[in-house]
Length: 325
Image (cartoon, rainbow, N blue to C red; front, side, top):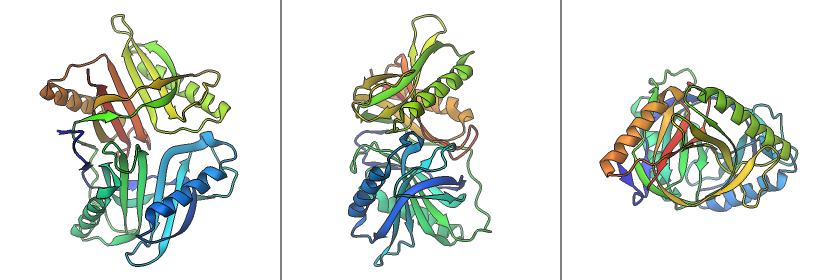
């Protein structure tokens, strides 16, 4: 287990074939001395290009480093995945259809100051398997607070060069350490309903449909991943489920949805990769960690779906958490 004093967490390195996606992006020349500056310029260009259909943009920023050899100038691309139903966005950015990406991947938690260690581990693992490093490295900024925050969650990927090489087997699920963290607050756009375990699947489908319809109708840009809040409804077997997204401060609630402020709070959390069938195991690991820390089990629980490729995909990245009471 780890607490919020830990600066960073290096996850397990796994070989994966990530799904392709439509990529809305801008690019520019860069070198290792100008990465923060170039990110700032590219991010502003993305923001300036969004003249409509902001709801179609997936929240997580995706950066691609192409031919990034130290001591040289190379190309940095920064952008976002587009929702499947969105063909493109008006503006000055480019839209490319990225193919599936064969890579060594790691879920990293922490600030950017320790990226070098994570990248080095990815590269070393590829070489140890007798494989050749590819010419592309990616960073998915799944959850972001600040450059130095230990709470950031990122998916780091280093490409494998040979498209015909057999990759080592991918684990069905990997579980990070149980952490105690102080998370910042955020504005939350959501829909809710009272339900029970028997009706949970149908309730989730109904609420996600309502949420995305309200988001699209008002063209609201998500500022973070889809989050589920579960609360005890006060009746035996019943609980309240909220399904929502973080949004920019001051965003009004569109018709069919609600908005509230989620205050900063201290939580116990666990980040895991794998399909939804492993969600119960992740909860068991988290609750066992809480018992070992002597923490009380509260009547509120949260799931954040940072990266999602399908119900049974081993590439999904999900964070589960309980408030510390």
